[in-house]
Structure formats: C-alpha cells, structure tokens
Amino acid sequence: MTGKAKPKKHTAKEIAAKIDASTTNRGGGKAGLADRSGIEKGGHAKYECPHCKITAPDIKTMQIHHDSKHPKVPFEEAKLSNLHATVAVDTSKPRPGVRGSSKK
Image (cartoon, rainbow, N blue to C red):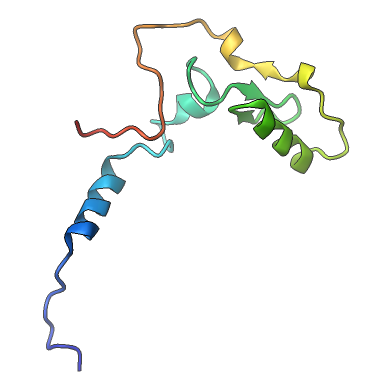
C-alpha cells in the first residue's frame, strides 16, 4: 500500500525549478520572434541561408546547416547575407536575449 492518500510534499528544489521555468525566456513564441528572425540588430540570427532563408548566429553554425541540408551545393561564405548589416541600430531598445528572467 502506498500511504492512504497522503498529499505529496513538494521540495524547495521542485518549486524553484518551476519558478525558473515559468519566468525565464527560452527564446520561443512571440518573445523570441525578433531574436530568431534577425529583425532587431543584436539578436542571435545574424546570417541567412541564401537557399532556404533559415537564420544562424555565426558562420560555423551556418556551415553545419549548409552541409546537412544542402550537400550538393558548395558552401560559399560570400553568398550569405548579414542581417545585422542591413538593419539600422536602435540604441534605445534593449538587445534581445534568450536567457533573461522576467522577475527582478
């Protein structure tokens, strides 16, 4: 027998993990859309694939993507479009981040 319907006690570690999961921006949804698409300068999406328009934060990640998704086409670094160079800088807005917490 398991204990006659005693309610489960939650540990402080479980409660802290739930609070962290609910208040930390993981980069998904509308909050991370600008960060993923490279619309705002300072986001993690810096380079755009010329073939499928997917974004990547750096050259190495883009080369890994290119080797796995477009193996028949040779990788040319000059064809990549730098999204940070095409977007104007707005210093009044905070830079987007992925691991930021909403509670301060």
